[in-house]
Amino acid sequence: MIMRPAFNYNHSSSASNRWESENTFELLYLNILREYLSFEYQPLEKTMKKLTYNLNSIVDDLICLLFFIGNDFLPRIYCFDIRSENLEKLLKVFYEYYENATSYINHQGTLNIQAMNDILSQIVTLETSFMTDRAHEKEANHEETPTVETKKDAAFLESLCEFYTKDK
Image (cartoon, rainbow, N blue to C red; front, side, top):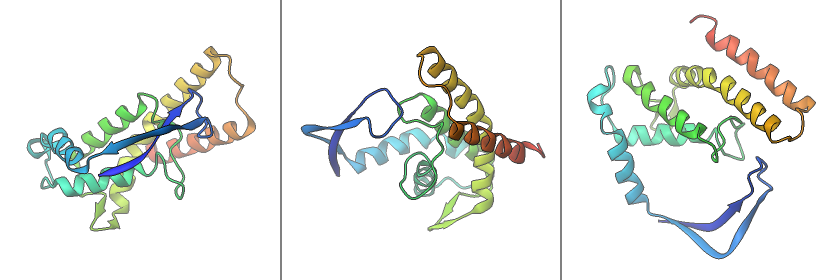
């Protein structure tokens, strides 16, 4: 079981726009989460072509991938905001990755760089559309215009897209 203070969020994208609820906690029962993940990923056992189904390896890979969404020690993938539907799209790509995958991303604590590259190349194709959607949303809500940093991030993202899609 994991227990943590409950947080309330404003709709802005800043992590500083959250506050702790007074005397309210969230409980996560890991055994129930594991059962849910088993139920969710069980159909892969029939559709995986090149890998043997292993729920523990899938959970390890999922945790590894989710570090890119929110972790203080790794650069995050900004377009995958937990408060948007983009997380569901990321999970769909994660699920579809296993249908033709040749290896798991994380093998007993060792990162398989080729497997990580394979799934990131699938994710990067979604990232551009997510960032475009976010820019239109900001524009519709009359939020700030993009800053120089945002423009640098967009240019970096564009070069990443070109790198990952050049041979495809």
